[in-house]
Image (cartoon, rainbow, N blue to C red; front, side, top):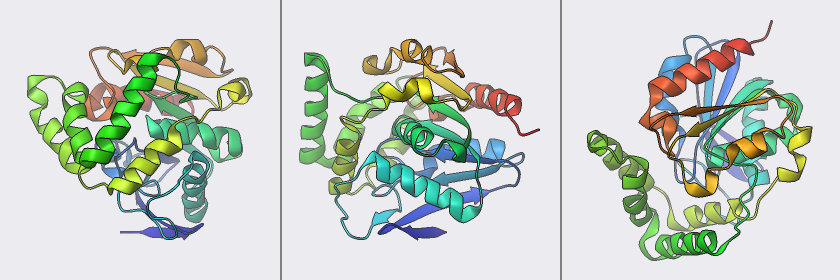
Length: 266
């Protein structure tokens, strides 16, 4: 179980395989376990790496266990792991909050990225509109009163709605329940208000944006900002939801694999 101590935190990471490095970044309340089906699919061709963001999974902030955290810290931690492993430039793949971290890496240190894949995320999480504000505040209240497990019980049927997804719903709730309440809330707050939307035109790394047909409504406007990125392309996978790589690993892995192959080093 490898850890890297960096900037006052112990960052847990996993690594398997050889070849061009591919870094996987998880979503809010998750961990490296988000990517177990991608590790098994890609570690035969690539050096697959995944990290737990500080405050998530097995990673700890040694100075401020319950935050505050920032997206800049999350991105710095990810780059520190890549540097530690001698794994730059890397293909960076981020789901939801992981996409936020990938975007931050792309504007902070673009030379560390060989390509970027953004899955059900956005270049800004600025809360606008009565509905969005109400949703965010409701989630904060639920998180404070009932903790990550309570939030997971609400989200699980939305993420995995099909009857055959019962095992995925149980797995999601069990994994979310492992989060520490204070660190989970601090991670939520780190993302809110963050934005690199004014820098999209400067991101020149090859970018794949993957969207689910039934993603959250506040993330539905992906194509509008994809058009502003010089080297970005958009793919939508039908009949899928926010936790796309977990819900539908085969079509997701096929789309990601084709993109990585097109952008492999000569």
